[in-house]
Amino acid sequence: MKKLSRRSFLGNSTFLSFAGALGLMPLFASAQKKPKGNFVHHVYFWLNNPDSEEDKAKLIEGLNTLKGIKEIKLARIGVPASTNREVIERSYAVSWLLFFDNLEEEEVYQKHPVHLKFVENYSHLWSKVIVYDSVDV
Image (cartoon, rainbow, N blue to C red; front, side):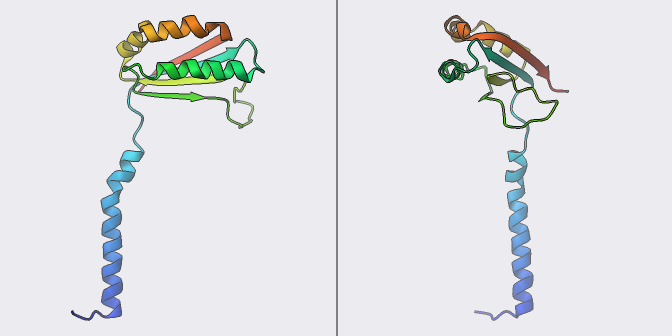
């Protein structure tokens, strides 16, 4: 085995580390890609009984039934974060964030039997719903 000088060893190590990092760059780049879908449907729910953890849990249970609708590319259920600035709206109880490939798939979702059943079974829990739909620019 050929003996390397310290300078050669450090040079080779630096090169190999740099080359290895370059090899991982596509992994990091793909981790930062935007979510799939260019149609965003974000729904905010206010409960009839805002202090009821049971009602909130029921609504979340209902939203989870919608996740299997194939047109949905990405779905997230959330509650208000603990952030507190003048511009932040925190009066809602639950949010439902969806990504679709396009408007047509969102319209299929709106008429889907599972979605209609969700509205039928869980609408008694909320007093107000606000929806923000947007598309990529």
